[in-house]
Length: 496
Image (cartoon, rainbow, N blue to C red; front, side, top):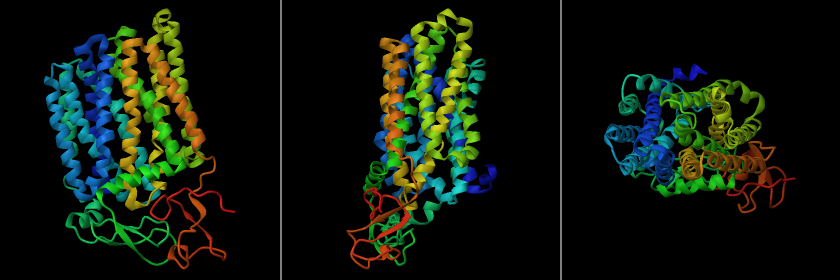
């Protein structure tokens, strides 16, 4: 798994992700304690609203990342976003009003909404081999787990020595180091398609079709697109402006069965994750009467479960496949939320105070493990579902759509906990997770091969995309790795 770190560019990107996420993890703990300090028992509502604003920034601005990635050097985009996040983190310790928390969180997350999709879309360009990319996905999942494991433990240690406001300084340091690691790199996108867009010259873009008929150039003028599939020849490609990457990404999601299922799975993860991130501070401090440092330990248990599963996934995925792992994991999320609801409704924690704290840690470990089993293979599904030239738009669309799920669950977790109690919050989120898991099982076909037989009745006779088609007659079928693109706008039905 660590062999991908031999690539210098990926090593820098991975380390940048690690230090930025470690800083973000410190901010997660500090923000929860700041909300509790400003609002007391209403901290869940404040935190839920702040995190909903975070998702609003993601949903609204992430689609623009695909456009920016085509017009701004990828390195400039990543470094600039890090510097904006650094400034927001430096100001957070000095706020004394709830609205100030909301404003700074919105600014910080607006920068993250630009940074993250651009970063995700860069990795498959740096590591084009599928095996290397799978290993990079695992390492990326481990980096995210640092936010919920190492960072909370570090935060707990720091809280014993200093006020929580100093944790934001650690956040700023993480963003600064991230920028310094990215700054010396020459990223792949800077040398090819993006250059044609910046210069306004005709671009030679990678074709979006599975055959070699009509490609989609990435230049601002008419480009010549080279197809990625088996058919011979080259076709004239249309220029693709910034807005079309958003349209393409959303269209790919709506038209691809496995990606519709992925969006449902994202909703199940968001339901469980919102409860952990929003309600933990109230559950630990008010519900169990534990000290502030134990909030960090509970979040660390969640991260430990996630990291453990992420380490095992490369071997597991080779045996089971994505669907067989992700769907049961979503069911496990719903089951864990159901257990938590039952414990809160029955007053089990009050009746068994000595066992309540370790039981919570085990449950958070469970939630973290199931979350990792759902999220880590998601990048593999995205990569299977679009050509290389369309990956930035697809990653941006996924980032926006998946965080729309969190936009629903964050306020649901916070406002219900503040108004109706933690049991009502857990019950509602459990129902969301269960519904989403069942929907994903229905949307994702049991048989989901990459190569599909299909026809093109709309193409004229002799079209180069159909050069490898078998049989005779006006409507002939051929087989290749199927993706939604300019030539393939609808998912095919069975071709006999």
